[in-house]
Length: 372
Image 1 (tube, one colour):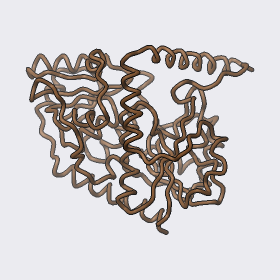
Image 2: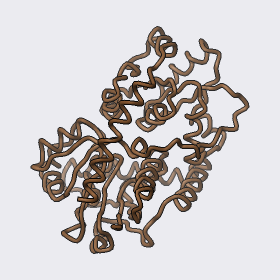
Image 3: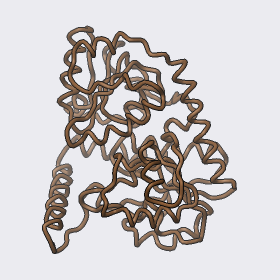
Image 4: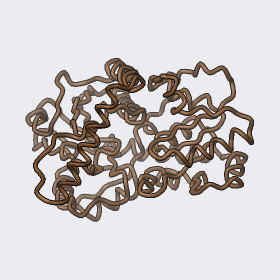
């Protein structure tokens, strides 16, 4: 069987990132392949990366953003919760991931490693998104592979429905070198098909690809048997108002990651999915928060991100559109709409059938890309 290398966001302190890497690795292992996650950990993702001498106004803005990220990272070193979270994730990564023996910290470090694999897969997660501090990271487009092995993108994501024009030529050059291309969002298919001569198909996130009951989800040690769970990232004020309304009208306790953070509790990834599995209701503005609500067939409300962050709703919008449940999106604070979403039953039988069809299509793409 061929040896497969995976390159993805496996190392960041993020539950969704961990679970998608774990799911793709384990899906391939179940298929009988030898799998290794390439331990690529570029500094620009969490620390902002190195500084340089500015040549124009744009460079000045980039440096300011890099300094802000570096400062945020340094502050995190003094956070007890952040330290606890890092310890939790590092242990989970060590226990659950089949990591390469060597770690790599730049695209330059990756040169020459392709000969170690028969196939290299990039994805999933927002590996093709551009950042203010670094632009696009060409390593996630497999720029370090020449003709040594087959290349595949599985459910790679741009994160948003657009990409800055300054990156178009680079993306065209890089994508045209990948042998088989799948992306996670419908808008990603359009971006690839418009920018490159290669064509892409839409594939589900690895957490949905893995036909698995997630029986390793750990039940929370809450003092209540019935609770709602709220998992939010980025902007949280909108979700706070929704959660307060649910607590007051449904007589149910809403547990949030923010409350856990104050308690210095850093759940493991499998404790985290347990919060979804055993909850009565879910509110979330997170893509993977939505996914695990669907996996466990839980009534949920997707609380849209607002303002500049609204572009990140594309990932969830694309999934909910494919499953025919865009009505679970709450775009603005509306108490009547919240009550209706809580009381409205979801036809999980129909949704699970649609999900099964999407999973089958994605699995077929991956099987053909690997075995052709």
